[in-house]
Image 1 (tube, rainbow, N blue to C red):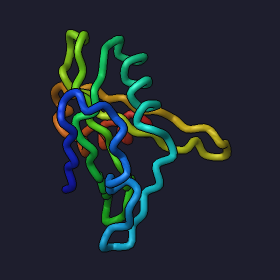
Image 2: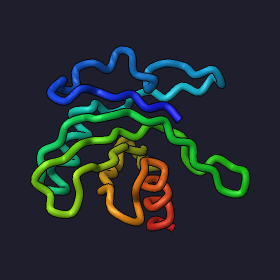
Image 3: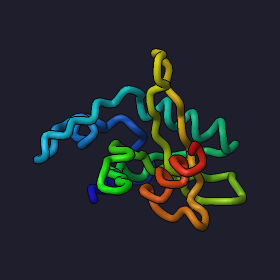
Length: 126
């Protein structure tokens, strides 16, 4: 599992070395369709808080041997939300459109990791 941590106060400018923009050894390439700032705005708007990027994590969720979701989840440290101190955020295309759906899942039980956040969103949509 890849974790790319960002020092507090570093902002969200340093994305040039993120694995989100580079091929992996398996040939997987995830193109950043939305900016970190767009994800940050989604987190702050949906959860009425302030957010700072803490890490970027590659997640590969499988179900019955098939890929259910493979992409990059951004982990934000959040302030001002009484339910959680972290939030997991990503976006996915909306089928048949040029639009994207934004996900911003709070880190609170039973969700305690980026992969659990993705899994919870898949289950809630099925």
